[in-house]
Length: 490
Image 1 (cartoon, one colour):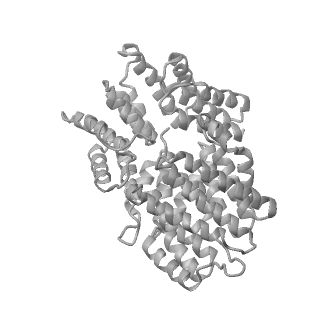
Image 2: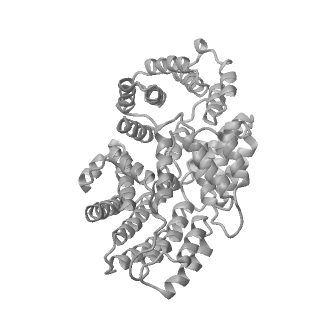
Image 3: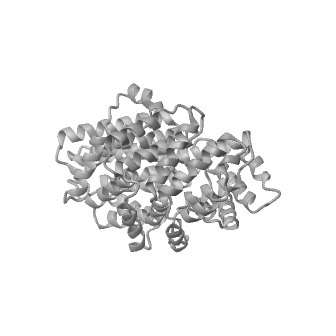
């Protein structure tokens, strides 16, 4: 439901990093490869030193220029440090112009230009420069389309163009006006076909295509652990790669495997040579909250707030500390609610939810809260045990009654008791009607996923469309995006 950290959008673009040996002055030589390896581990300073040495020797090496862009991009998109935004964007634009001026006749030229445009766009999007970001995505899209026309069998281009088809085609309807204005017509199914072809073909970028394939597969198939296992093995087999740990942590958390994720978090590579990912502490705080370790959850969020340089997730951190303090019976828990109004922005969905609560706080049903948190972490037996203490017939308000059936549905779904899950999701939808809660649209989405797994295509399509039909609720953007992707996959 919640919008992911900006870096997880970068998972869509992981496949662009490595560049094979090019023609003329451009060469993915051992020095460039060494820099790439260090940067990809998030050893940013070390990688930057190596690539600058290569550029001093050969300033027209397009591979080196492209790899040199990654430190600026990764540092900005991960740390979200607003003080470095303008400087970083200017440095990336300078590299784009340098590549554009190259006279080399190679499919990698437009590929590298598109790559940097995408990286610039991601940075702009998460610093609220959405129009500039959309324009840069359009330029990247056109570059890749032209490259595909000129070099139809160039698999890196198929993978990259497929990626943009997938991402643009998944954008919620609220942004359709912008896509129409920019003239970008993309198709999710086309994107999946391109990416699958690149992943199945023996070519220099096959491993990166597999990363992308598994990430998309995880989005489409909610009950398939194949991709989860892939990312978990990726991290454990590369214990010195902080980036892989970060990616795997996010995938495991999304798939409600918090115990495995917390193990990875505790074993993650650390040291001054790595780029600090303070957001990982916020992720850990969530997982400790789900597990019921409320004091540890507060500690991790306090660390995050103290060290994080960005503006996102701060409201959410204070809201989560409020929940943890409430469950600890802290009489001063409300102090965190007051802080929500004072910190950060409300760009991401988590912060929007926190702000909405802070503006209109209401009494939280602790039984439903505990059940929700346990289920969000994959602790379904604990959630089921907690829900046994809730009497729906004596619920004090309609929202609590609706949420009770929704929580039962999610819990039974996690326990693979699908008939019981479906029964409670249908009750959720009936009781909700047109009320602006997210319970019904997400219940419809889950019904769609269950029908999809059972190969009941018509039923799945009905429920995914029903998800899109709800006009107002807190998670509309993310739920609509998931429903659109699922419809395209059908």
